[in-house]
Image (cartoon, rainbow, N blue to C red; front, side, top):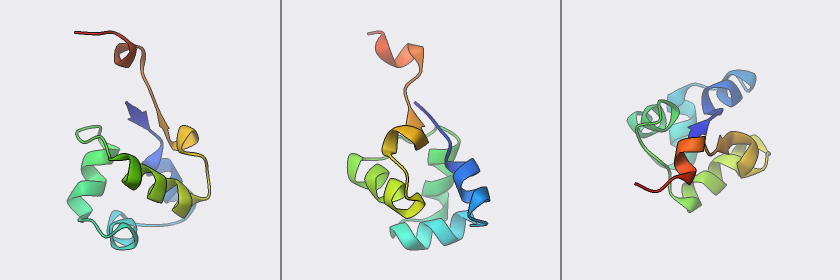
Length: 70
């Protein structure tokens, strides 16, 4: 799964630490989401979407490889 989180933060002039505080997670968690090392829970993804006032699908989106089974 890919995401636009870093771009959304830049638009709002928000640091990883700022977003982490609003979400109640660590800055490292925000970094891991941005770099694709961690897929957020549904609740966390919804919180992120609410903060940026956008649909979840405009921040997080599936890649072709997410559709194939391994």
